[in-house]
Image (tube, rainbow, N blue to C red; front, side):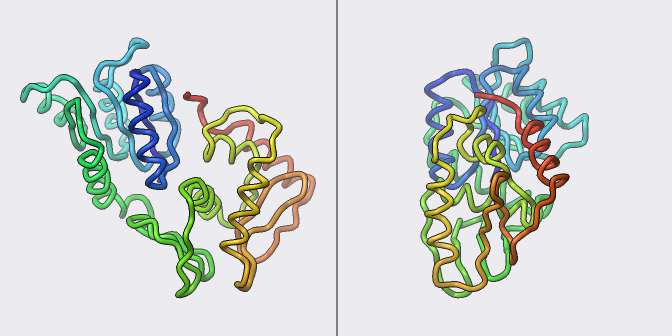
Length: 249
């Protein structure tokens, strides 16, 4: 699941982001309304969680209203210190799907997130990812190859689901850094290689056929067979990385 968090308070944002990441979400955060609006309307998200009161000249309700004007049905959960009935009703009528008052318990937030995602899954391609005999249940985050369960750490799960959503396509290092690590520059470390190696040992070792393939000098492909990358394909893959996710940190 790709989730966008638009929240200016660092402590609240960290609390929500960490919890969602532990549940297997790929999380991007924006700390002001203008960047949040740009990310919300220009990228595809499974869920948006936003504050009502934001710096940057654009408030949370304006973001929701703009999304709905554009016909985007992305589930939106509003977080706000504005707790009156009138304010809650206003937020829901302008297009919010749910409204939680601050302060809140993360258990309740997660339960509401799960409910929103259950209702929205038909518009987001179902509740399961599958490539060959590898499956991920997007409701429970259970992973298996055939009938064999696979236990993944949260980062490994985020990496796998991202690769599966791009089945058969080259995924570059830059794309992975932005989507899985929320990092918008290459720190020149081997963190991706290490995580891919760990993931491959769990997903491919002892199974056939292998599904995770390295395209040397370009990136990775998840699929039932390796992909031959021509110069044109490599340029396209690198081009897609340059036009990747919005840098919201």
